[in-house]
Image (cartoon, rainbow, N blue to C red):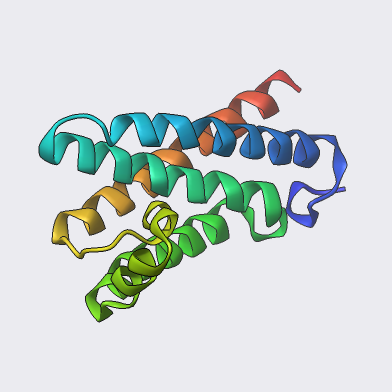
Length: 136
């Protein structure tokens, strides 16, 4: 079976690796947000976007890497742009932990960190896939 079908041993390994990476990126991202100022904000944003990519690998194998990359970009950039509406800020006010999923204020540089996080995750995914294929 092909990797694109979401079946077979390579696909199942990719799914579990994606899930494991997503889980590991939660505390990493939260920790990076503790770094001072812009560095912490951008590094946390990169980790958040990479986590979204990894979650998509785990739940949507049939998309393939290109589809996963595109969907991760749409989701992360969409969440950032949603902050322009004030809806996430209202949700955070009602339920504080929503800030970790939706953020609360818009910043242009967050779009850059989201795109960078997806690009890094997709690149690492490509390298790992190529390495697994080379080993057989």
